[in-house]
Length: 135
Image 1: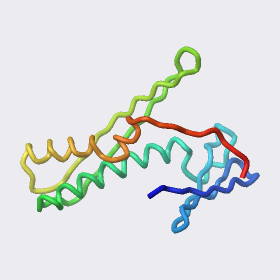
Image 2: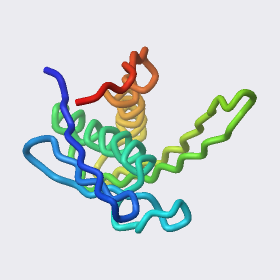
Image 3: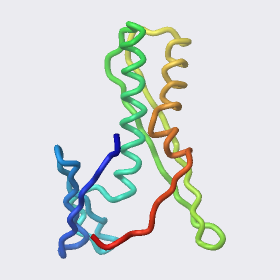
Image 4: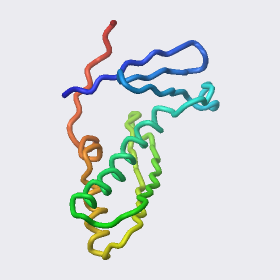
C-alpha cells in the first residue's frame, strides 16, 4: 500500500502542516534558516523516522521471542557534508540502549535487527523520485 502525505505551507516562516489523513504534524525551518522553529525541520523528520523504526524493531523482535525488555532508548546523530559538485554525503551515528533481562547475545541480536529495520533498508535501497508537477 502506498504512503501518501499532504502538506500545506503557509507564509509565516516555512511553517508546514503535514497530514497523512489520520494524524497531523507541524514542520518548519530553524531560525538560522529564516524559519520560525515551531516544528521539526525536514532533516529532523528524516532522522526521527529512522530512529523510530529502529527502536520499534527492537521491541517487535523482543516480543516475538518473548524476551523481557523495558525501555528502549535511541540516540541518532546525523552529519551531512557537501562534497564535489554539491553531492551530499551523510553519516548517521546510532546508539540504542535496551533495558531488560537479556543476555549479551540477545542484545546483540536486537541491535542487528535494528540495523535491518524497514526504514534503514529503504534508505539504502534504490529511490526514484519524480520531478514535481503542478497539482
